[in-house]
Image (cartoon, rainbow, N blue to C red):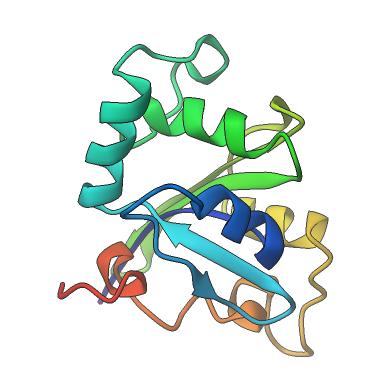
Length: 154
């Protein structure tokens, strides 16, 4: 079975602030006071319209859905730590990426590691429940596709 997620994650108040004024930004609540905004096709198109297609120099080589995501993340992170997270798995093989920003600056460099998302969650104060990791502790396994986090069909 496959798993695919591209989202911006952070403390719920910061995520709600980041979503303000974005018609297609859906806030999905997680446990531990966290929330995420899934980077759906609709939101990516809206971000491109707002921020353009020019790549952000700090994000060169980072596989964001659209370059505008980096510009939006830079703007939205001026009030709190936010991270872009990405996970792709199929049949047990896959990868995770993460980039964290605060005050408009990259503070957690581009991570491509099996535990990249867990590292972000640890920075956000999540402590794993016994026998599980931070990813499962906050409920990131609830949906297997980015679109489902936004309530869209797969």
